Image (cartoon, rainbow, N blue to C red):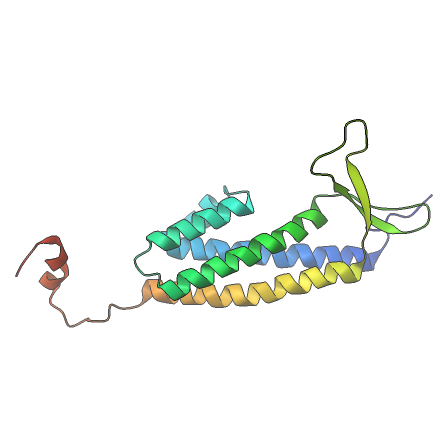
Length: 183
């Protein structure tokens, strides 16, 4: 009986587990950013954000909300856009790892079966690519670094949301001046 590279190799299984765990932290932090941008309770935000399954949809929603948010500065919008580009790139590697079968060849080589985007009729729609725990750990380290940057961004977005207006001494009636109201 042959051994399975995930079931029987604790090094491989640990690498996959670390990568998966780091990814869930990224998703949770994005939900906190969504909470700030929508000015909703975190429980509501997590519930709604969880319906955006595709990373591209998550990116589109967050960047659109940032554009429409009164408290987001150009610098924060740029940081969010940059973070979302990194998120999509990392998602590609993470999805490849977690949504494709990993096996072992008769030569004892561990591989991941990657699906061809445009399969050739009559051929197997997968190609085998060697994979190692160190390769998975490299992706995991990139996601972990991304998470640290994303947490900094989330703190900045949250801080902007709850920042006090610059001119707190202005009379309440002055707040309506842009709408044609006068004192």
